[in-house]
Length: 354
Image (cartoon, rainbow, N blue to C red; front, side, top):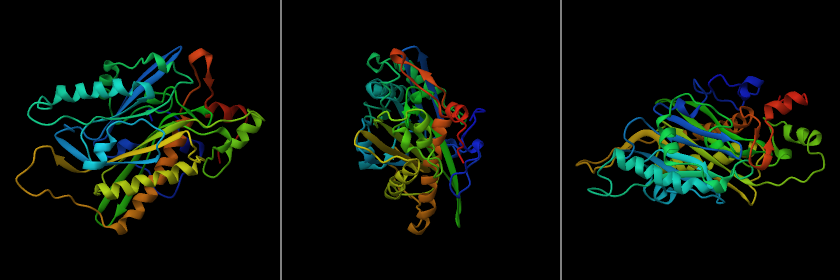
């Protein structure tokens, strides 16, 4: 977005379904994304905020769930989310050693906007996800601050940058530069038209495994770049799924499980040290914080409608990962460590993506 050249601009068409207007998680009405990026020498990191709607999320919660494909990760808040099935804060993404700061900052933000928290009502459950950016970023420095978190939330908008920005600034993917990527799909059902969008922070994989729509692009790159050098897979991926499809928490969880299909089509084999975690929400129903004096009505689709959402989340996840790589720029970071950008390498070595 914001004029960036994305994977579809290289002639790569992922899947069968039609993307939304922006081909972004923000095609789901009300969803916005904001970044703060720190890029200065050894400091190559940031924070990304995903807002599920533009109201007060604590007072108007949304149906939510999470799914762990491989639990090599340090997310916060997902235990309560799984138990209660709702999201009550923005979702923050950052580096592994900054999750404490991010959570504390998000708690402060929520308290400022909801003075009843911890006084006349319960506390709040902040949702924070992470990936490890220590190769390019001085992660021990813990440079993320409360102001950065507040700015990321305040910066949230419908259009945002992808690639080496926000929480994705220092991330690696398939031995190249990774980062933030997004995509969406439209779903036409008898009772209406809906949208499902995915945002990823990609930080996993080895070059030789990279697949672009079935083409072994990574193996081609390895043969001309790495040759016989050993590759090691370390890292993880956070996948945020948003939809306006009316689903229950159980149905949403079933959809989240299918992110692995799109992830695998990019070449991931879900290795031992790679954490793959999906967090999702539906904006179709708002759950009031205060107990009403009437029964809640939560519309849900029939199970026979699930296949369209299952296809949508696979396609959007696959394309979001590829967008995170193709929009990223080369970054030189901690101790001179660097990772090249996919867009530069395919041009330099005349490698086609189709």
